[in-house]
Amino acid sequence: MSPVPLMSSAALRFGVWRPLLNLVQGAASMAAPDASGWRVEWLLQRDGALSARQVWSVYAALCLVSVGLAGGFWYFGAAFVLPFAFMEMLAVMAAVLMYSRHAADREYIAMRPNLLRVERRSGGRTNCVEFNPRWVRVEPDRDDGSLVRLSGQGRSVVVGEFVQRQHRRQLADEFRWALKHLED
Image (cartoon, rainbow, N blue to C red):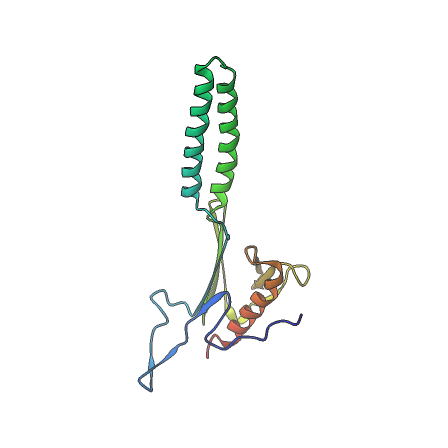
C-alpha cells in the first residue's frame, strides 16, 4: 500500500495547525495562533480505556467484593480463604500501581517559527528538549517502521511511541511538512 499523500495546510492527522492569517469576511487579518503562541502542536498519548482514577475505583470495588466473599467463607469455617484473598489483592495492587504510573504517559511536540519543543512524560518524569526548527532533521530511528528521531544542535529525541507502527512514517511526514511551512 502506498503512503497517503501529504495533507493540505489546514489538516494534519496527528497534529493541529494554526495558520498565521485568518480570513475574516473576505479580508486578511493577523490573528494570534492561540494564547500559547504555538503554530502547530501534536499530543501523542496512550490509547488507554481507563484513567488512573477509574482503575483505582475498579480496584476498590474488586477489593470489597473479594474481602466480602472471603469474609463469608471465614464466617462458615474456611478461615484459610481470607489470607489468600489479601495476598491476591496485594498482587492486583502492584499491577494497578504499574498501570496508573504510566497511564498519563505522553509526548507533546509544539512548533513556532523560532522554537520546537518536545516534552516526553514517562512514569511521572517529564523531559523537555528544545530545538531551533531551522536546524532540525526528521529521520527514522532505525528502520522504516521505527520511532521518529528529531535531531539538531547536538541533541536528539525519539518520538512516536504512542503512534501505531504503520502510521509513524506519516507522522514523520507531518513533522517535515510543518517544518517546511512553519514560516508561511
